[in-house]
Length: 462
Image (cartoon, rainbow, N blue to C red; front, side):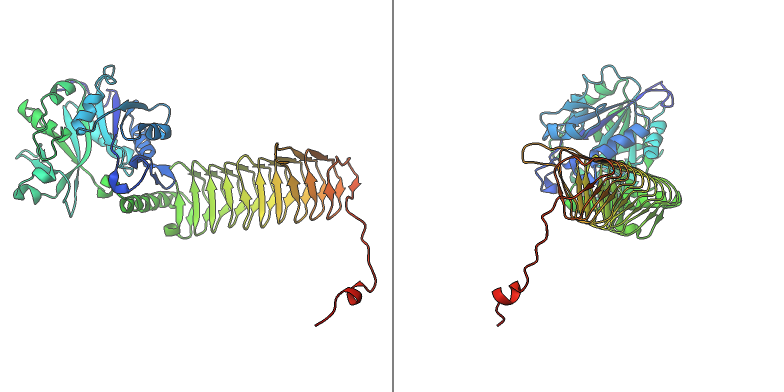
């Protein structure tokens, strides 16, 4: 029996993620499929970390490189060449766990809905015990291992569905596949498990029998919310997990002062940060660590990925990716802010504007139908409709610099590399290929020629 308190002992997490997940019908490993824009195994890792696990290991097998590629750098990968059951997966990690003491939290990489507080409770109930099991009460237990309890309420056995008797099949309390073990003596007990079962595998559930044979009680912690036990084995279950997580996240933000007009049509990934008094309109997706400050109105029909949005902004029917937006900016509709864009405060980006790899200073306006690429715009620059920065010559990309107060006339082609000086003006319809001095007017278009009577002489009416 463990004598070290789980409240003071270190806890290591071991995440099982070696399987192929054939029911997903995918070339990708199951655990890298995304829930609200996040690979599901990242959600499991985050839950383990938030539960207090000081070290996290992941058992990988099928397409291990793809699984390891999405894991945070602090997570250690342990390779299981042949999948021979959950108990074997833990045995494979024996060498990696030699330096660990305290408790081992065993989790499944395809259970993205587990809450850190639930995992913490499981660790706590394992206090001075060799094993604790997370269980769930379900209406339809088919396919799950049944929890068989003794007269004291301890878990006497976990019987797999294919090995269960008719009496055991009637039990509605099931195993979730989440366990906590005392590391002291764990591998000696694992050595006592055999594969004499319908699957011919080494079941981690058989640890219950081993503990009982040693006179140790196995405690079961039953989930308060059964949805936490939702595993993902198919595309349908992936969608269901996303719906559950979406509702959970949206509810949290609404409780913290964010208005979400249509929660069923709003997707926010778990790693985002929102301040109070934000309004989110329907069909909006906010993912990959996006941060939005108070007072901004986002949507409808908007996608924001890995961006920082300032206070009191308006983003309508647009896409923003990996960029930083200052305070009191307006973007859209139908604008596309590509990666590595920084907008200052009070910048206007109007309809059908595309910006990439550029900086735009405070108070500047790019009202409509414009492409700005690889550029630096100063403060209070006005860019007329139809303007294009011609930044690519087919071999290399060059920079356009437009200094403070410059006025770019409609349908100006700015051929980089180019600098337009402070307070300079370019005439509408110009092709500007040379630097424009400060305070100058640049005019670069052919003189208009009118030919009287040309139409009547050259076009006959039918």
